[in-house]
Image 1: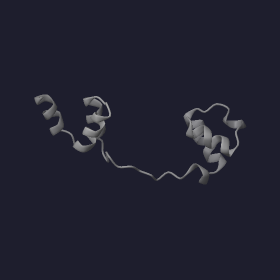
Image 2: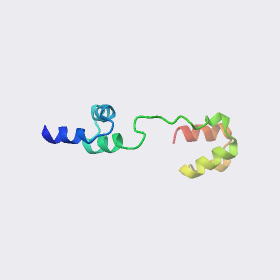
Image 3: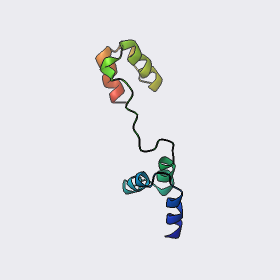
Length: 84
């Protein structure tokens, strides 16, 4: 029990650490995530796929390696990105 207390004393975001442990993450991974800068905060700054141009969606699909993207229309690109 002492090592866990020692680990928790070095965790920057103990609430997030405990939530991750409850989800089944290892102690090491939970501590690593809870100690990252801005841990526990969500960005939410990306625009919705529907608001992006087909070219933007194509470029994103290219980055993540979706095959067949050149033959896809905008809606197909959106679906492929969401399901990737």
